[in-house]
Length: 235
Length: 235
DNA sequence: CACACCTTCTGTGTATACATTGAGGCCACT
DNA sequence: AGTGGCCTCAATGTATACACAGAAGGTGTG
Image (cartoon, rainbow over all chains, first blue to last red; front, side, top):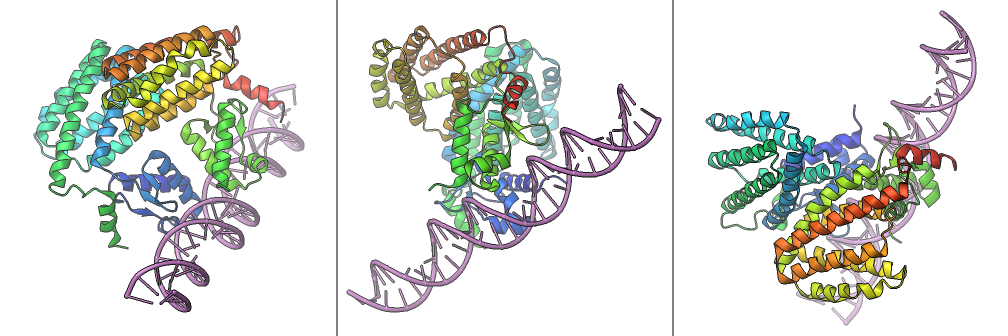
């Protein structure tokens, strides 16, 4: 069996990313140690890692809460994401490691066929994007950059639950990804970076639009205070 | 008094960045708890934070060591740094918060006078660069980007001790910085980003040259195994 | 003499007990 | 009735004790 602290960290991280633990939820050591059947020591270690990841943050001097998610953060996160992914795509184009990207070209061309099915196609597409990310990580050969990208993807995962991409957007996104991959295969670093920025600009617009729609006239839905009140009921 | 874990973390971090703890040095919990006069619990917390920072890493399943510094890493670190600082400069130019940058213009123009003194001028210049970084952090208004930049600067601090910049290089660097600041004041985001890339390219070349020189014909000086042997003597 | 196994021992991972600090509620006073 | 201060309590921060696993050394055997 793996270490208890590792188990608790993985479980809490997963629950935060899946919104089982909503932003603002209090993370109390004793409660969690009881829930996982372990002592406070490994729980503290898990919580410290969550704080380092930015998934939890101190609550007024004492206590931890799941970090809030606000529309404002989305734009900021994409400013960082753009810088990192454009650089990563550019470096991947220079590295000339073509095999995995040739495979991605073929798979991305088949996305329109995939998306005829409504929901299974969606997950197949998300898996494909994950393989694209893996290929880029492998190609750039840069632990610092990969680590920063990983941190960004952690926060993106929390947004995915909010922004329901429609099939039309997914089709567009697949074409945008294909252009990036084509540029990498062609060794065109500049185009790879620019195509990445194009993709992320469209992706951000879509995400923000989706947020506005799901929030409707209620901009405080994902406000931390509102969520905190909502979660106060089960306590 | 502040928390013991915080004290231990700050002390260890400072010792690693200043090379008082060389790369490869073993970080044993009992030894450190004795040295700081605290128990193993806060020491473990401090070590976990160092691992999250990338300043320490697991050593073969058991035990932690100060993470190695290799010339290969410098190039990788600068690939990330370029992406982040170019984006930050670009965003700072768009934010139109001019006051702090106008002040930096004046101070950067006086650097040649500062550097007539050999060593005090150096520290004055480094302070000036730190104020530039602070101004950028303040201007970009982006916690995600600032956090990523902070992580990069942590690793850069460890390199500074290795690469002895000569006064000529510092003068050049000041002119490069001034161009970046001018671009930000002019609101020219594209130029701010490009000038940043120019500065970092020259800075990387200088750093790598300085490393080659200080390592001379001994490329394994900062190899982790060599350092580990060196540190084995006091044990 | 070399290799393999066993023993021992050091160091990490976890649990639990103690200390301390900050928050919330209650009571007295104005 | 409102407010201020005190008190209690709960949760975090720290110390210590226990369990276990990996490594080093020694010894026995081939």
